[in-house]
Length: 340
Image (tube, rainbow, N blue to C red; front, top):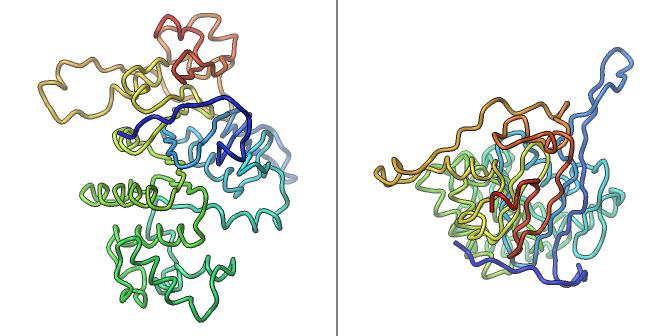
């Protein structure tokens, strides 16, 4: 488990933070009829705020459909947010035109969930890794092969494999190719969208160790999106928990796993498998009743209240805000003091 990175005062985003997300919303329109009349919205992200310090890893967890991947794509500006701010290295990029975003993209990288689907099957491995170097004019053509070879060596691949095509690589090797491509422009931030979930368990540890080594060597900053809570605990300095488009809890990794406050976080952590069968029998599992509401029609007040055993009328009527309850631990629950 990585040490927590403590929050400090001040608002100098350009110095202290790589990313600051403020009140971000991303709504997708629901349309009907021949004229495609707008009749509602899918509220994929519904007013979230968080910061990522330089050289830290922020884990973003939650069940499928909660908005994790959409958050990453908004930060990369693959989506234009409905509202809110995304401040990247001191610049608000949330509403920048595409021509200016293109220049900033060399400072961002992305590692995708499916290492095969994210690689062009008709291109050689070397040409795939070379694409960012060519587009952003990072190196001259005469030095291109050596630059690609160095990226291969950096991620543990033999440069002699540069002429192979993606299907000639194993799953772990393909993900190493994806990492090499993400590193090509030496980005300040890498969005890791479930980078190990499609890999064999034996390979997952290798990729995680590689990412940690590269972070230490190159001073990288990660937003690590995942649903595997054990992996997130290992790699993250801080962890944010999402539910139905909102962040319900965010804290240092050790603090969150040892002292979860929000009822949803507690339920998630109670589901982590424990390899010791005797210890597993003694722990209490928290079962959440009901189904996840539709993001097209989320509940009023606290989004989690229809499934929470502690909910009352206030939870139905009032939208809880993230608030610090001490030790950099933020939670959006009206009953946080009772649960802490």
